[in-house]
Image (cartoon, rainbow, N blue to C red; front, top):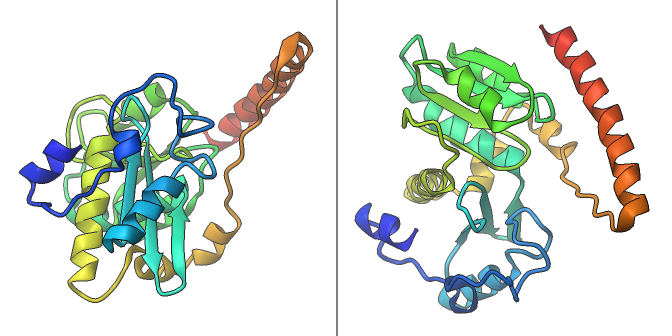
Length: 234
């Protein structure tokens, strides 16, 4: 990420030293996912020390993106849906090829559908899972979002790329800064911001054989519900 930012003109980038070197034990985090509560705390503290207003983090294999923005009333940690909306707000005006697609999954917010409709860009909703999102692009470019902040931009590759998403959100933040705005300002401009207020992330952690059996039962119920919803969508 540091090399990517340097190559694209971002010179004032400060890493979090205790989290910079790879360590499979992840000693500074309870769970190595930028969506987890507290995952960005050290980064936000470091940002306060150096006067930065944007925090960006990837997970270990760099296919997820976490971000936090400092505003007048403090830090705001962005959820996956919010990051997806912000990236789409920057990309949609540039999507003119009829093959271009905006895609999201059945467990994500429907705001992207409204944004795509307003921009005249094709929208599709898929089952959860990267393979379904990748298929949605076909031969065109695809901007996608799930409740986990994963993204692929103008590249025609088939990988989820947290690095390109990080660069895209940094560029958007920099452009907004030049107009005395923040990512929070852009988000609050959404005419469907009330939908984002109802969105939230959560994770269940189950331990032991009994818990594993319960989780399989719950997953089976969820899978059936998803298939019913997908059938209705089709």
